[in-house]
Image 1 (cartoon, rainbow, N blue to C red):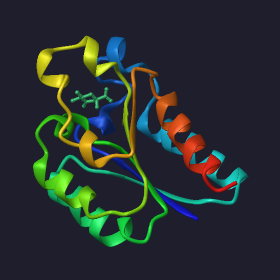
Image 2 (spheres, helix red, strand yellow; image 1 turned 120 degrees about the vertical axis):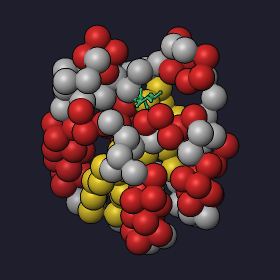
Image 3 (cartoon, protein in one colour; image 1 turned 60 degrees about the vertical axis):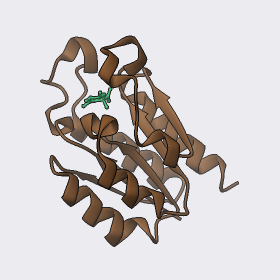
Image 4 (cartoon, rainbow, N blue to C red; image 1 turned 60 degrees about the horizontal axis):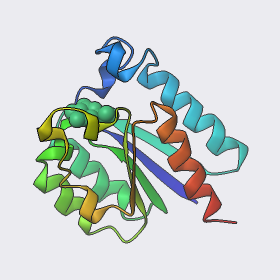
Length: 143
Ligand code: DQA
């Protein structure tokens, strides 16, 4: 079983970026925790971050079609990334949308996700551990 983890714009800055909102954990630490958990249960997991919508779409077209699940934090593309949404809409495998912050407690523009209608589910507001919870859900589907 293989899982693709995608991180959108500005998530490479985690740890330095508005730590009062996003915490002190870096993207590398998140990816390391996900890879460790995947290895424990014998899953193949790959992580990719880009600040460019097209690069995320290229990765979905390249690896998303054969993945058994996608975990994605689309960053601000969540709120307007229609091409990203269309790329995800073609995927048959489950998709979990993750947000570190509780977007519904924040500015109005963050309350709308154009990704949510094509995702299986969403985790928001549980910090970086939301990614791990998404992975646990993917793992639970296999047993
Ligand atoms: C985010 C929330 C988005 O609104 C924001 O643009 C991000 C991060 C989150 O993880 O909380 O870049 O997706």
